[in-house]
Length: 230
Image (cartoon, rainbow, N blue to C red; front, side, top):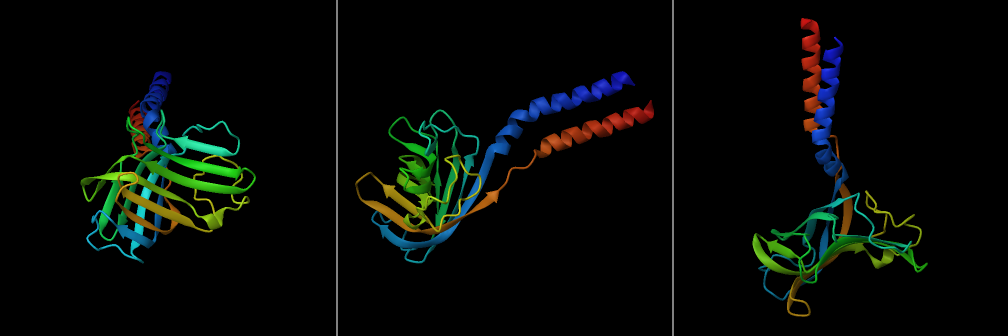
């Protein structure tokens, strides 16, 4: 009987040890959604075929690593960048029937992806901002130059009472408004731009891995069956 119990315990440990890296990764990945409407459109590159104008809906999702390290040493600034770590994991936006997918992996040239959190910065304001710059992206499956795509608290939200620290928040802070800024094209050249007000919401909250639950459950059933047979 004792050997059976020990076998069961060892089985549990094996399942957990094998699944822990995946569980840890999934538990730290959080997805937010955004939605709003465009209030500024300039299709300088003729990428949108006249399908996006004032009032066109904007929506999308982005995922980030809630355990990303703060790269800033300043007590009022949190800088959670994709420098030697995975901070922003995915980013996708839709507008006027078009889909933009951004690859947040940093490139050898000047590029960046990350989240900034300013808490009482210079004793004046709070800010939350998702920033991407110079990354690979596709529009409707075709490669496109991404100057930047930013989502951040608007100027009306610069109230030092919003945030309590520069820790990376796992739910959207209660700023009065957020702004969406997209610029496709070469830096300082002709570009396609879309701006607009958006709201943020939590899209997905991590849950325990189904594989782990299933694996442990299988071991429990097997152990119980063996115990009855003995």
